[in-house]
Length: 391
Image: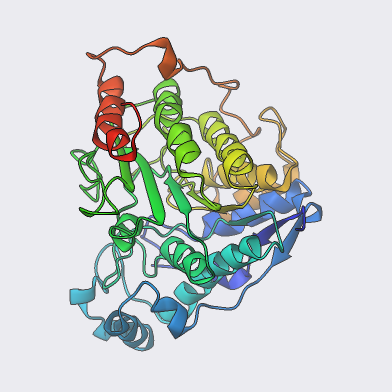
């Protein structure tokens, strides 16, 4: 197996563009790629462009009629069929939508193939993580569900156990739905509580289909306002024990940066430093329980200058085995490019000033009256007994 990581990148993914007034500005991808380069990480990874996902691959998750609807909307955006979630406020249709969506999906599928075949130990596609797309419809800025497609391809290649950990502020509903009845896939999502955020799913009681898959879906619904200490406490109170029990052959993780306190679309209060800590934890879990096989994806994130490029550059660096220190000064050339492209002032360092981030281990005890601890208790009680674990 190659010890080097792969960074999946094709400049054309920046064509995933819903328009100038849409919060998912593709400049976040371009700026992340430039910051990765500014830190010299290109020398530490193999930069690879995979081919777009073909129709047979897309059909591993998506219905044929939906793929046809995306193609039609891509060719004629004005005729988009809203019954498929296309041409809506969240998912406006645009020319070339099918092609660029398939390209992003192809990068995640290619990442999964490379890791499974031993061509790379880790692979990152920060343009991916479009976890809301459903088998038969677009949702939440997501056209094709690249995370689900990567997992489905792993299963097709012979994987018997794949774990998916989603730390985006929004529930990973599309991935959960894709594998709701499949015990080979363990989906774990930590997200803001559905009472206060789209897509209003991800309740702890959602544990997978009755039968063999029951207990294969895990949801930690965090109260609005959760900050670093609570977020890390919840992650470590739930995720490592489940991964240790499941022993996945591959770990797939989604690192939406919209948990950040500056994100305009959600209500958690997590710092860049805590996001980095979870990235490190996912890397370590892959090595401890999945022979290092790790596919890491991007996701949400709408503070497109201040947060997203730094968060995902940390992710690439961790995957490359050349972690960037939180206190590192950001190269001036990148900061100048940010201002030239966005007229915004760029951050000066790779930290929010909260490193190292402290939190209380679950083993040290819990408070039944604390809202964060209540969220953890609900998730553990819903799933752990189904998996033969002590809640």
